[in-house]
Image (cartoon, rainbow, N blue to C red):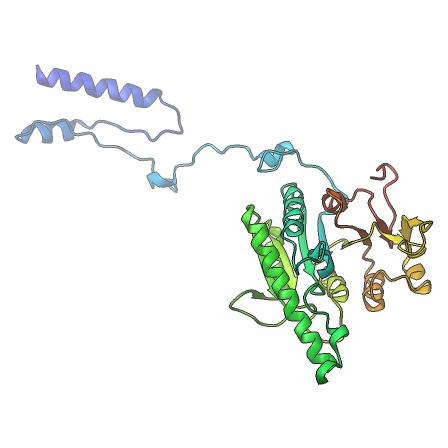
Length: 329
C-alpha cells in the first residue's frame, strides 16, 4: 500500500514538473532513490532535483525575467518624466557676499538652505550641478593686502581658506536635505575635503552628486570668478551661472541711477569694451576663448536658481542667445 502511494506521488510530481514554466528548475523523482530510501529504517521518500546541464547548470545562474527599464519609457528612475533642458551640466558660482544675506553674520543659514533646496529640485531632474563658492563674506584678500605687512599672496591664501569654510557649511546644508555632496579643494586638506581631481569630479557629477569646488584655483592673484570659468571648462560644463545680489547687468549703476536699464543679452566684447563690472577680465576672457556663456542673475529671488539652471530666461546672458520660445520670468 505504501509503495503504491509513493509511486502515485512520484507520478504527480513529475507531471507538475513537465507542465511548469521553462523558467523554473525542473526536477525528477528517481525510483532507485525511492528503493534506497525504503531500505532505510526511516522509509522516507527521496527527491532528487535534476538541474539543467550546460552553461546554466548552476541553480543560482538561472536567468530571471528582466523588468523593462523605466528609461525606455522616457521616465527617470525616480518616476519623473524626462525632459530636455537647455543645459545638462552647469556650474553655479555663488559669491561670498550672497551667502552673507543681510550681513548680520558671516553666513546666513536661510540663504544656504534656499540654495540647497533649489539645487535639489533640479538635480532630481537629472541636471548635473557643480558649485564654486567665494569667500568675500569672511575674508577678501585683495582688500587686506598691505595691512600689517600682509603681502598679496598671503592675503589671497587666507581668502582661499575662507572659501573652504563656506563650502563645508554649504555641503552640510545640502546633505541635511538628502543631496549627496562632495567638496574638492584646490590644495590638499584631506581631513575635511577631497583634493581637486578633474576625472573624479566628473564621475561624482555623473553619479548625481553635487560637487563644490573650494580654494579658488589654488593660486594667488586669481579670483573665484576665474576659478569658476576654469572649472567650468575643465569639467565640460555648458554654462557659468553667476549668482549675485542684483537682477543682472545694467547699462548703469542701478543704485545711483533709478533709470538704469537691465540688459538681457551681452557679447563678451561689450563686457570688456564697456568695462562692465560683471566678472574680472581674466574670467571673461577664459569664457570667451572656450565659448562658455555666462548668466548673471539675482540669488535672493526665490526660484531664480532653478530657473537659471534649467535655462529659463532670467537675469543677463553673456555670450549666448535666449531661446525665443521661453518667456522672460
